[in-house]
Image: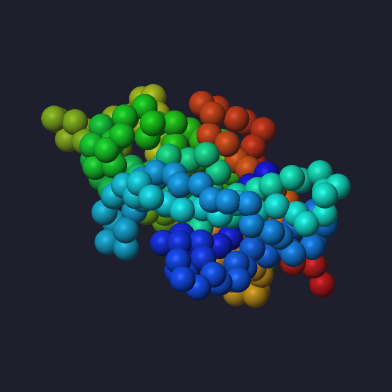
Amino acid sequence: MDVPGGSSMDSPYGSADCKQELHLGLCPGCQLPASPKGTRVVAQILVDEAGGIYRDADVLRLRAQCRNPGCPLGSWTIYEPGGYPCRRYALSVVVSGVGELAGVPGATLTGVAERLDCDRNTVARWVIWLVLLGGVDELCRCCAELDPDGLPPPCLPVAPPPAGEDGSRRLPSGAARLFPTAGLVLLLLERLAQLRRRWGLPLEEGPGLVAILRQQFLDSRLVIWLPHASPGMRVSPAAPQG
């Protein structure tokens, strides 16, 4: 069981000389204060504030467990802000790569893959995953529930098809056909996150995709895995009631 929250730190106890209280939160099942259960160190590819990509080989994550010996949840990982289960590339890197494909004229899978130091097939899987993740109509409906006038403008910042030698624009083939749709999903998730924050709903800072998936994980333990194709996985944030 994995639970987002917490943060990356040099030592789980602050210093070797003074053991500090760990703020592990409550057990998701029993709502009792959690107890520490060690740590784990993972390597992850991240994006910095300037959009650069770097590798952090020492991302420290705390492990926690319920104080109720009969709790079925056992133990879980506490993720740093922006962290998500079983991802070598942080979700923010996915946003950066797909955003470039959708919004920068002439961007290609190969070019983005070289910038992000990964395989072009990995970037293509991100595009497909995003298209399957959230249906455009459903995301538009969710935005409209929070604000009927809150949809993004109709002129979306997506890249046009590349121009050929004769100046004509040819419809791209393969994964490139999905770049505009994937970009639209990112845009709608960004708008949905803005609207949820305006309503005062709990949502951490960061790109809309990251914030919404992490909040869904926190609320319902829902993990959107990244297989080659998962049509059944949908993001469906609802408007507040009342």
